[in-house]
Length: 108
Length: 116
Image (cartoon, chains in turn red, orange):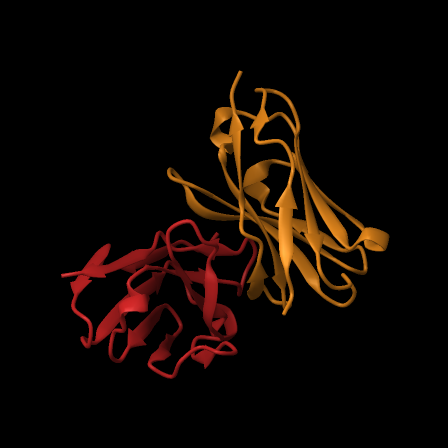
């Protein structure tokens, strides 16, 4: 199975800052089938990005995804207070689908 | 807007079967429907999916303990996980899968504890 590694584990930033979250795969993800989810405490994950860079419906354009193969990045251009949360990457290019361990974006 | 709601026992005895149901606000037709769980120790783990055509797929890590079925007349799909152990304690989510593994709508989640 494909193992996903996310870094850093925690990102301490302030509103207005730029956030860059990394997701690295143990092998190349076919067709760049990588998604990003946001999760807040007590809530279900929320789809942000699919296909490495396609924003889901209703997701603000400050969220962007990039990368291919084994290295992917989620960028939040200017952090809003509601963006402080956990972020997970997920690959769906091969079975079983797997998730990364997450990056927590918290207040500096 | 698609809404999903998990239901079922919050406590299951070891070696018992963990059974959950997801009620969906729309028809199950033409979509995949997934179960995903989240535990502090293992993070997010995909359990499996069911397509409205009857196709299923499961995570091999569950060693054939999982079964996902549907009741289209009630717009529900269910998860049975046999031979439950403490390692199955988690928050269980049901989700709509657009196909390919992209889960765009999720239930709120239900905590299931496996304990005597």
